[in-house]
Length: 272
Image 1: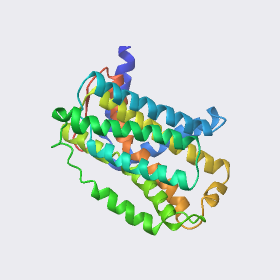
Image 2: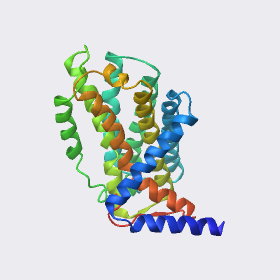
Image 3: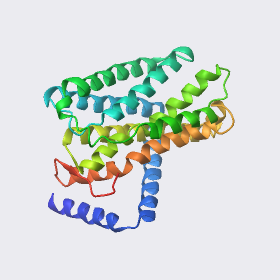
Image 4: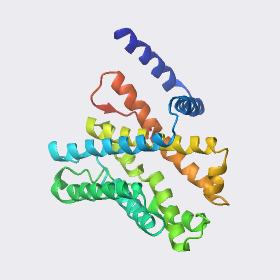
């Protein structure tokens, strides 16, 4: 076991010494290699979306355990949970007026759970809430997402308000985790349950991104055409990729910490 840890430490140390451009290149290459691997391993790429939902649910379960058993919300961002509730509420509205399927039920369950988490942080566990660390101004993401949704939205036959709302929830979901990352950046030390929860979000978003990318490749681009014309199809794909790369840096240090046998994740300055 020791030689394996030594090899992993050597690789991570080499990666850490590289300039930002090299790190970005390595991240892109690793992501492409993972996509190629998934394309050959997973025959029905719709299963990737199901897997993303399952991993997300697992992350929420870890969060519920932390709040109920540990009786603390330290390290959690209330603002990230509020942003999550906002985009889920908008997406539920769009689902009911535009299309209703099994994902609507899953979104509703996640929405109720998110409201419960917000209630616990605001009232039941308020004493352990790190408000001074949760200092990300949410209007920095809500306003740009709203403006972008007004400018770039689906070109379907649905009512204009519904199309703008759908675009807004897509954009907001892509950046909703930023306040949580700011909290972890401010504290520098992330306790296990919070780290597990955020890592699960990262894995879920990578699988969701892989699902979209592989679907586009399998359909030879026809899926983008089916989504409409203009910039909207590209923005959907870009939003999925942005969600993945926002959490990529944290996931790297999480994996490094796990292989290093560390229960508490310590983030270097400027990571998030």
